Length: 266
Ligand code: NAD
Image 1 (cartoon, protein in one colour):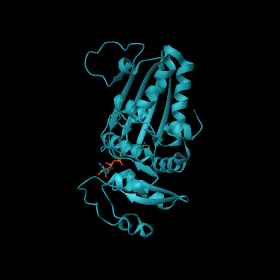
Image 2 (cartoon, rainbow, N blue to C red):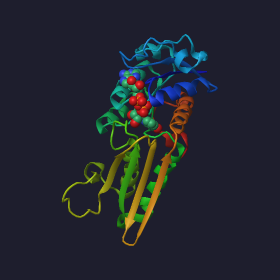
Image 3 (cartoon, helix red, strand yellow):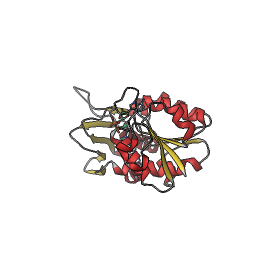
Image 4 (cartoon, rainbow, N blue to C red):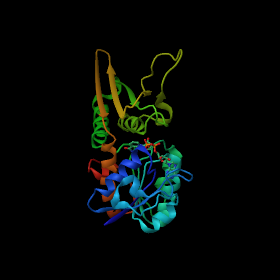
């Protein structure tokens, strides 16, 4: 039985995941965490996630939770997740990170932490991970003649832009076409910016209402256009991916993994 701690327990993703952990064979909810000062801290998790977890108090102490738990599932923010990844690495346990918005420096630090089992996926849905592969293949097949633009739409509450998935899609194109993320990613356009260059990959973020997450990659040439789109209609698809990761990661060697590893698509 794998004992799981869930951070951001009162959040959109964390609450969904904590509920799913209690329904999953092979997993047991061992701790629910929230930020210091959050109104749910010290509440009984049973009130939030059902009688099966009654007696677990929502806590703000990750290190203490990881003394007892095997895996931490963390959908909070990049900044909070960095602290949690370090704490889990110290404890020699595993972490499934869904937070997005990591800087290149933060990603480098995660890869260099010894002893950590880190599952890091900007998007935990199966369809989006297949799209990462398809986009990489499409870019190789279409080559430099096609302009690549990425458009993502998310709900009004999303804090980071562009989405981690849009960046991952751009990276899939960049690796296929040998483009440089530092110089070739262009975020939105405004004013007299001149004609589009051949190398740039445009990335555009739309924020509206309650959209769970739409991503379209446009490959445009003179006379034709190919568009590949993924639409998430429920957060449950991300939560189910995190549950699969929590069942899978404790059996892996220390290292950094992503959804394509779990799905065998690398
Ligand atoms: P949210 O704002 O609803 O939830 C975040 C929760 O984290 C809040 O309840 C907040 O109080 C809590 N929190 C903040 N600091 C904390 C701390 N120090 N310790 C414990 N809890 C803390 O946000 P959300 O929509 O659930 O998204 C959270 C993150 O997950 C975002 O980065 C989002 O982009 C990402 N996300 C990823 C995927 C994926 O598939 N990887 C899917 C959806 C969302």
